[in-house]
Length: 278
Image (cartoon, rainbow, N blue to C red; front, side, top):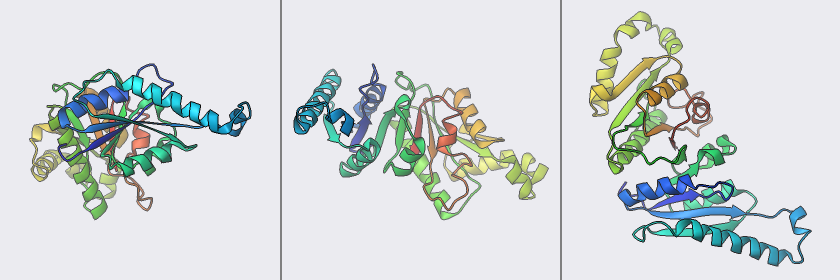
């Protein structure tokens, strides 16, 4: 991701390990991006009532958080550019999104266990959201898996397909991995479109078409008819994908997302690393 300048990392003082920071640092060491370790702090009115000075309480809370951020980032190599940023804000989500926009961040990293209200994050994130599941750096032997929908050719889905592919391809290049595609073909939609058994017989033809359209080896294109969320999660687990990349369409006018499965729904089916592209 040579054009990417900054990864914003959501830090969580409640966690013993900052695996989102570790993952972002590992990727930044390959891509050349800088890191911004970010966290919000806030004391509600009830907490402020027990302090001698509201101003002093806010200052002390901010000072403690800044010291903690500095402590968490000091162990990384000097070659990595890491900055820390803390904000006094009741709404940490919107503050993080504002910071990502302000710094032109190209990716937000977050520990999955810190993810509250996924719908809001997916709706407001101004750049791809990397949800880190475990403290294991992706290995080159494990593929990056991109979920796309080749059956819809409207402008919104086409643009999202290309965004997902570009993000997944760049990520695979950065970690020295192989890019694979998964396409979940909804059986009910196939029947509704009067494709029926002819559709089943033409799976190989569809696979070849997808491979040619997106310039990828057909052996790395995985098509399956079934419920999209289960198909996508199933292939990610079968391939032991290092990262699963999928799109998230913010347009509420569309009845479904890129692959007939929302990123929010997929969180219930898949426990690995998930990179959501808006």
